[in-house]
Image 1 (cartoon, rainbow, N blue to C red):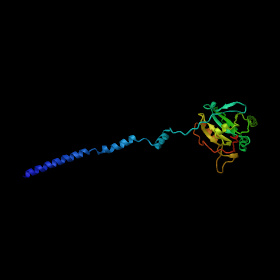
Image 2 (image 1 turned 60 degrees about the vertical axis):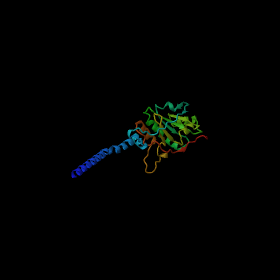
Image 3 (image 1 turned 60 degrees about the horizontal axis):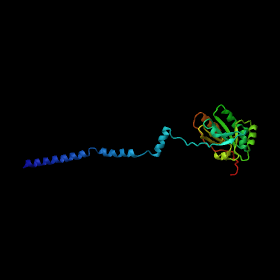
Image 4 (image 1 turned 180 degrees about the horizontal axis):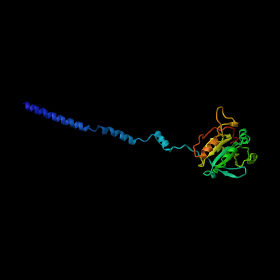
Length: 239
């Protein structure tokens, strides 16, 4: 009797142990089901715009927006037509807006600000300086007389219709634009930070055009690519 009871209990323990072992076997790899979820989500999530931007910055693929200089053709003081696209790829082009009646322009020409810069960079065969007069009442003959008065040999272009000035958004005289050899606007704004030779208090003098040309010819990024021009307003013709 006791023997039968003992045998029955033993059999029950064996069955219970087998079922327990089977249950444990089914749950021996819970890590597989847990790890499967993150693996799947990582594969389907694209990189965020911020992460993509950082990746481009890290690899140097991110470039600043470049503005292509609009093409134009204008006659110089000697009647020769000058076309900007003929210079792109060959020259760094400096555009200077001028008005012979403007006191700011007169001051710079009397001080030979532009002449000194032209002479300084004369050793570079790939730099050309073009003065543009968008004053509606100025003629090619006026430009020729100004060139003779100041012993100027560079081209002074007549833009009495103001078409080129408006194309470049010129608002002041003097106002400067530097175009790199790829035809992009590398600098635009004032010649310096000293209207009539006066710098702001406690501020060092900076000739922005000189600085930009030095950096550009050295293959360096331009420190100050844009400034606010000062001087007289451009005297455009009525629309």
